[in-house]
Amino acid sequence: MANERGEDRSSDPTPPADPTLPVPPWRTPVQHRARRGPRLQLDRERIVAAALRIVDAEGVAALSLRRLADDLGVTPMSLYWHVTDKAELLELVGQAVLAEIELPGRTGGWKEQLRDVHRAMLTTFLRHRNSTEILAGRARFGAGGLAAFERILEILLEAGFTAEAAFDAYQSLYLFTLGFMTTANRTPEFVAIQRQGAAYMLSLPIERFPSIRAVTPVIGRRSLEEQSEIGLDVVIEGVAARLGGAATAT
Image (tube, rainbow, N blue to C red; front, side, top):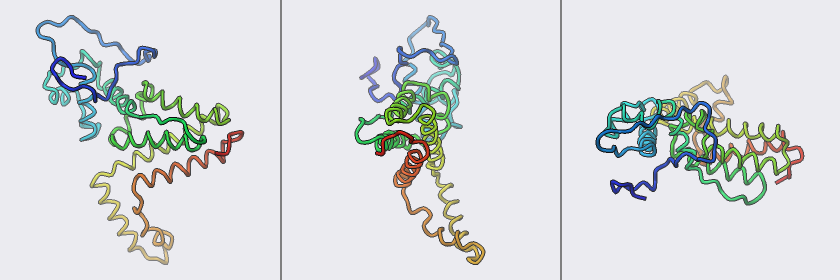
């Protein structure tokens, strides 16, 4: 959909706030005052989209309200009509990422349903590899994060998990996902360090480090997607064995 300047806004990553959800207690409403002069072509969706582009390209540390204002061609003070501070901006950026998750339909047994949900989440997160630390914060309590949380718990509870076991299972998968995302952001420097480390380990004396020498040649042979599938299988099978209880087998 085009805005009044003719710009296509259909791909804006942040939907309007869900009016059906209560306002979080940490959110301070922005006080909109009457403007004087021409109306600025600026809104929260445009601000968040620009902020997410900076985070995607350069990381969270590169994002500041001054940098964002420069990119948008506005004054920093004009941003305060729409966000209260950087903390709220980062929360909104995280919510924008979570809003991109396309939850799949429920097909197959509970294990496959969990795999499908987490595949969808990881696909989204890999598009925004610099957003990991944002997603671990208050962004989770936006509409997108709550929808994913509800789906995962729904799958587990309907499979027969107790409330306690369902949350423990969720937490195990959540920690795996965050850990995977932290290591998935493979900068050129990170890759170079890994290669140097592998070369160094191959030079270690085999009589002292036989296990390291045996394993080092296969380090790095898996793609991120392959490694995520292996990790999901390990966690989900572990959840089934440790916490499943009355859960169905599939």
